[in-house]
Amino acid sequence: MRRTVPLITAALLLSWLYVHERFGQDDFDRAFSRSLHMVSMRYKTMPIPHGWAYRHAQTKGKVIVVSVMIPGGHAEKISAMPEKLRRSVVSVACPKVTEEVWTVLPIGAQISVRGDGPKGMVVATVTCGG
Image 1: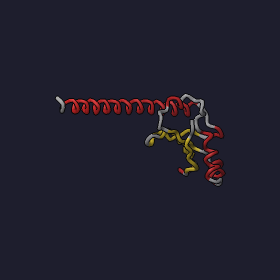
Image 2: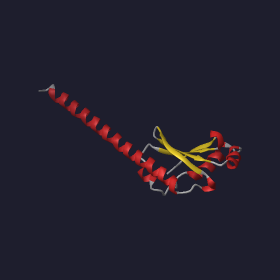
Image 3: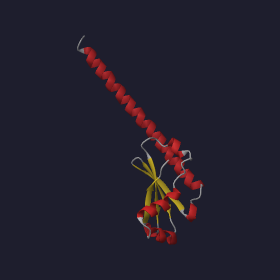
Image 4: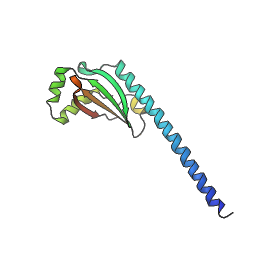
């Protein structure tokens, strides 16, 4: 009896940890998928300033990467700026901190916006804050 109690306790603890981890990951995945959908819909229905165009949103690890197309003239001007200023300019395409997506995005996940110029040139990538 003395040997079985620690074994049963250990088995119960391991079972609880497995179930907790599994359902916790499922919750993260559901919230992350919902966030990706919300981000996609947001960019399809709300215009981006300066005539920029939404291309797509995709996941990369725990990051939702939003790709926006910056017209040629704007892309060239922005590319000539210092890195910090380029990121600041591209950040105008980030979701506002008051938008619902930030309440759905799970802890540990991020949204970033990548500004693409003509011919696939990446102008800047910025991590959005919410």
